[in-house]
Length: 132
Image (cartoon, rainbow, N blue to C red; front, side):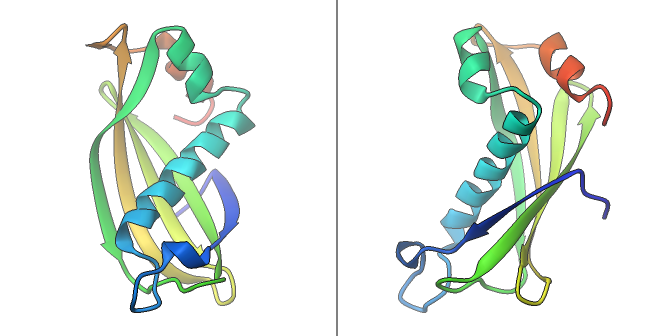
């Protein structure tokens, strides 16, 4: 897959379960943090959009766990995006940095709420116009 953005992170000890691997719920945090970093790289923030009454919310998420991350592993979270109707579909994958092993493959679908109602947003369309 071709990626348009990536960020590096490191597993913290409290993110691991008794088996010594990252608890599955923490991957959702990694994915969300990556999307936030991606927006910041485009000079936009979720907080700024929220203050304007525009909220991007997760409508659907599909996660495929491949190889577990462990404490202190450094990893690379990568993404691509496309638009499908009013949905923004993020293809997000996580790779262990040491060997580039795919750890997680995901698809995250977001929709926009404008003043609490489902709606298309020209702001996000404009923000992503060069990539979708």
